[in-house]
Image (tube, rainbow, N blue to C red; front, side, top):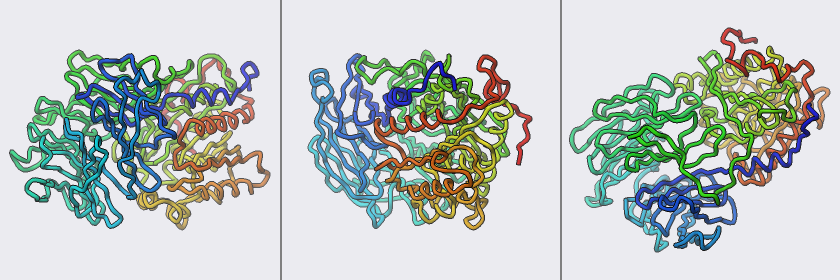
Length: 634
């Protein structure tokens, strides 16, 4: 380790934990406002006062996701998850946010519901009431009408099955299209006509498909639906009042085959698609008449969030890049100009100096090219510059992806002087359904081999690898460390084996295991309790004690097995429990502790004696481009 810049884990952790964490955005063209949540605060900026930030701070962090609704200039609504179900909150805002400092509003609880599932339907323009579908434990959905200003909840009707979304088909609130789940758990689209008191099916591609309505234009009668009847979530357009049938947008030639319908342009023919392609996401415009999809709208490499709204000639949406926290942005369709919205000076602190951007890369695997983001270390000497250490990061899911947004852990590694590869291994989204499905039946084999090949490439450059993973990525990191020599492993919320998790995991986790299980069969699949005896590097495991998806007992068993290795002890295996935390860490003090644990652990790893000098970049994975001819080693 370089002694020129000593490691100050506390200061570094505090700096990164203070980064803005804007999420759960809401845009209102009507009111002229954009709002978001940042930990315990609801914040907003008005179009006519971009230099002034409105802010209401709650006593504790708001859980993700919390749905935010801009009802009127002086009124917002929140639906926030609780341990039992959902709390509906009305937020009265002071007329002048600047006069009340950071407490420019009052929260009123409208209802506190105990329910396994809810859906907040879109609010009709100008209406201060909104429908909320509440799925009971008997799978009957009760539809309630929230009167945000009065703070009341009244029953509007019942539906015979669980609902998972819906849109209004008219401007008067008479006809609501809902995604209604059948006995198999797959959904079809039905229309509830409140005026005529009728209930009828609108769209079903097949009895076994997942069919949903996503968008509707009451003025033209256009609707946009999705279905997985083709093996991927295809996008279809229809005008039920004019002609029966659905016309489908052709599969896109790169990335995921279909985009996510995000907004309808009021020209009567254009739908905005949010499209994932590898590590990046972008927007495309699809013509609902010709079914042609234009090329990606020119945005920086980054991540487009939700929602996307149409405001005149502009598309407005949240956007983040690898070195820029999420913030409101826009694209002017007429001029072709992208811009971040200006933020007031009293918004959350500016990002600290030294954040690095990442370049897009690709690595070979048995399932095809693996998209990745490669983060360099910060310019100059970090505490571990010259150590020869590099990080390979693995996301959870596994049916998920690393996007090109800001990830504080990767900035932490960069500040320490460690280059990082954020890898979308086989099974990740963003590269088409065949790449995603490549993990089905081969979990614990094709993904382990793919990550091991990246470790081999870095090792051949003279690097020693630290594997970092969360959830399934933590299981994968430990699995790779059992077959490859690594300097260390950082595993957040891992599990020991498919067999143990099939007993202890949550229902949604067990459903996922059914997809992945065939190649990692419960009886003979990869089991870390036995495989971890071959791990020779140091290990840091952390888990939230209130994790309902993967119980902390999984990590406790892993830590005990690792400490039972020959020649291993407490100093080689660290286990950190996060009291009261779930599957995701919440709150800046908790995040600060986690970043400090990671920085301290990485700083404790021994130097790699044959490190390449930092002044001479190594060829291959972390410099120009990955090697494409490196065979995988078994």
